[in-house]
Image (cartoon, rainbow, N blue to C red; front, side, top):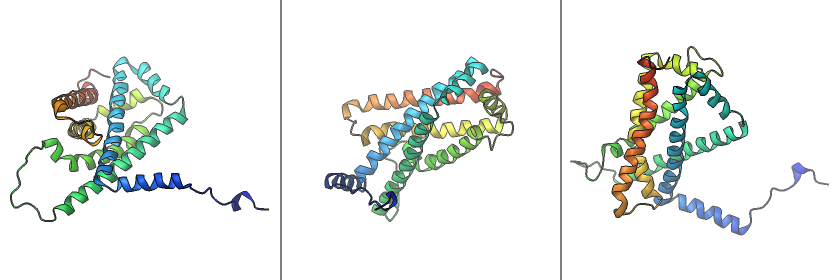
Length: 237
């Protein structure tokens, strides 16, 4: 009699195999990679918008902000589900971005003798730099405020104290402000390009999409930067 460990793995049916093959084949195309960039980018935009809105509660005082932080941990299953989704989104976003960049380089192995920016913005031309910078910042941010490994005065559970004590150090605030400025460039171009990647762009709505990208970027970045500025200026203590 066969034990559970000896039972054969469930076979993939023909329709399921066709679906897997189609997804793999689609991802191998440039369009497929851009769609992945668009979907993972949208997840990122929604996250930073929600993260900024939640962080704004620091202005309500220690009690409110710490209760908000504790509320996020009431369902560890949900918290870890969100973390896993975000982790996978970052991984697939980075992989797709790298592969698209390599494809672009292979299509033009010889650099232009004279290059001039046409129909591009400063934000789009700096995506290859802001991306790695933000990836490094995410690692720093997690080690700083989540685990406390890079926080010299970290108190588990007292998120308000951790924020205030961290941003009272000018160079820590400077790191966050510079990172948010990099995020502003990445966000602006990302919001614009994800509308194209997901097939939502149309010449009729181009100006509206750019306006939306500008407004969202300003709201998100201003919301983040205001916190270290308020701490440095003594408005938050």
